[in-house]
Length: 132
Image 1 (cartoon, rainbow, N blue to C red):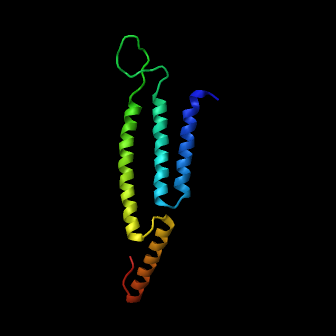
Image 2: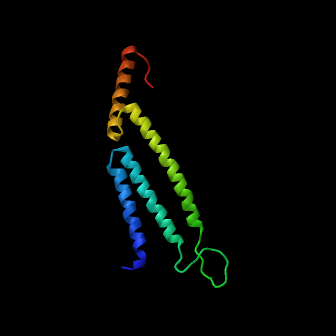
Image 3: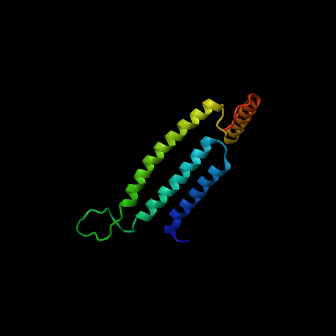
């Protein structure tokens, strides 16, 4: 195996690990961690493809002919900032969900919601109110 391809294998392992955690766990915090691992793999991939072997920063100087493209790196800085803001919002929502439902397990929240919906529908039928 070529030594230069280890970063792509790391990207694949991180991506599949993050995807597995998101799909297999019902804990909302663990799902957010899985999403962040997935995001790190995408950022690592873009930075890997933006680097040119033997290239330097695109500053015009004598003796340099090969330059790395700075655009993927700049885009990933933006992605990191957006990812941190999204994570902060998601954690705030998890805190609110825990306050409202007393749990952060996805299946328990769905069960509580189903019970409350069924109770509201049965109360509406008892008093003859239209269900919408």
